Image 1 (cartoon, rainbow, N blue to C red):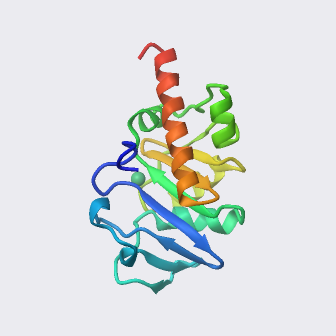
Image 2 (image 1 turned 90 degrees about the vertical axis):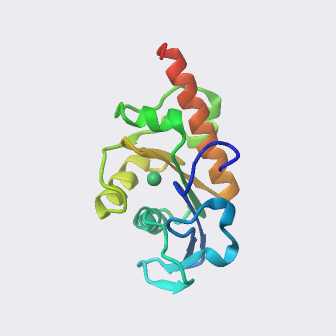
Length: 172
Ligand SMILES: [Zn+2]
């Protein structure tokens, strides 16, 4: 994620589902310092099952998606620049390309802005995600679903590229 420019510093987060458990990256730890021991394991109700760090502040979004979408095996949340800028428009990201269709399953909708970490952002993200593989969080960033964390990173990268294309088409 860092190498692809999808996040900076401690922004963004990653999780993966294993049965009824979710492993998620910790809050506020720079990626280069992160090891597998820093991951936090949660039950689907948010209870910490394992780990000594504070779980990502966006855990409610992750848990809501896993609860509603049994097909979701991994989630990646990024703050890539073009996609985040697009999320301020409140419009679907709809370039109509095969890349976006393959990666996200169609146009990527934008959830209305809600505060980070709130139950409201979780509900808004879930509604705008629908059955697709990606959603834009209003004035915030991207959330992508994948069969694995690596595949979800691929979806984030595709959404970022398509957002860049969309901005170029607007002459911005
Ligand atoms: Zn974020």
